[in-house]
Every structure is written in C-alpha cells, then in structure tokens.
Image 1 (cartoon, rainbow, N blue to C red):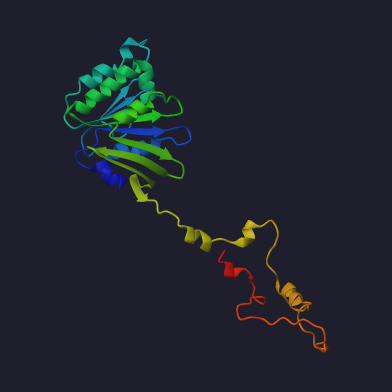
Image 2 (image 1 turned 180 degrees about the vertical axis):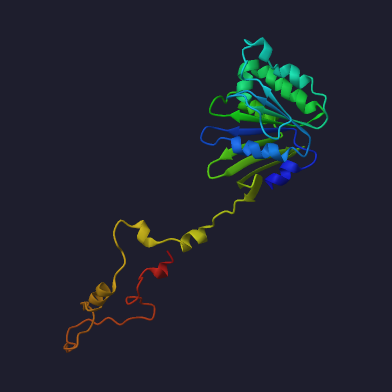
Length: 258
C-alpha cells in the first residue's frame, strides 16, 4: 500500500521523512531518489555532513561548506536557487531540514516549502527531519506534509498519507532488494496463535513435567481412600469414581479450559 500511495497521481507534493541516529534514513532516501529519476530532474540540497556528488542526481547543491558565507567563491544561496527553478518536472530533496532551519530560520524555510508546493514546475519536495536534533518545529512541518514517513526499528515504516480530505495512517514492514523498495502489510498475531505456541515449561522456574521413572513411582503410590486387597470392608469408606473424574489423567485441570 505504501508504494502505491507513493506513486499515486498526482504525486504528493511534500514528503517528510522523520529519522534519528538509531534509525537513519540514508539507505531509504537513496532508494527513494533512484525511484524518482523517472519523473524528471533531481535537485539535491546538502545541508549537513560533507558535501559530495550524489549518484543519479541531476544537480547537487553545496549548502554546508559555506553555510556562514565565509567563502565568497563557494557560496550556494538556497533561497535564490529554489526561486530560480524554471525547469519542468523537478524533484527537490532537502537534507536535512533541521540544518536548513538553523541556517535560514524556521519562517523562511517553511514559507519556501509552501512556495515550492505551489510551483507547477516542482513535482515533489522530499525533506529529511532529524527528530533527535530538534522537534519544536516538527509539528508544523507535519501539518504541511502531504505524506509523513516515520522510520521504526525492525525495518518498519509508519506513514500518514493525505489526499484531499482523506487521511490514511498505516504501519508496514519494508526491505530493500537490489535497490528496489518493497513493502508488506504487517499481519496481527492473534491470541489463539500465541496459546498454541505457548510452552508451560518456559513459564516456570522449576521443572513441572515428569519423566518415565517418576511416572512409574507415582503409579505405585496407594492412596488412602482407595480400597486395599486385604481389607474386609468393616468400618471403611470407599470412594466410587464418577464418569467425569479425571484422577488418572495427565493434566487434572484440563477441564478448566486454561
């Protein structure tokens, strides 16, 4: 379902990817970029780490080496670059949104993304937000995003897909095979399956089962209320078993349906 929503026409204008140190989005973003090369030009703005050319990207902009404007010959003005985009069918990638806000303030970045969403030449804006660095502005970008992606442990992804008045929230498992993103719905585990796989031995700190020798010794024990072979029957109480008695069964409590 996720890949279907991702490729639905018209494309969602603003995809917000939320990650953290424990769940980085580098490999996920790499596959996402490769899947967008069929739509048009990829314009990648680097705001963190070390600037380097990204494969399968039309243009990579260096917004990290000279973020303070110290190197006049090596300056990339993000605001001017995005406003000057006139190429049809362009996909904008912002990595990362937190660092972009640190450089240009939240108000300017938020306004710029809204302008990009209204730009007919822009097919989609993809931005990465590191939630462990800053989250005070996260809710505003979540409200603006038409698709919100949250990477979770064990290769799971939670997403919120907005299309008009329709909102779909779902969690799916994903894997990357040969550079292709594949997602599957997570099947809920029912209580019946859990009971079938339950081993009582694993729930106890001591051994509750009997081996063959212990079972034989147990069968040799003569219970006091049972008749003995030499008893004459004078002044004795005899116990007659009913059909529902389970004294000789392995589990005397199985009729309780535990």
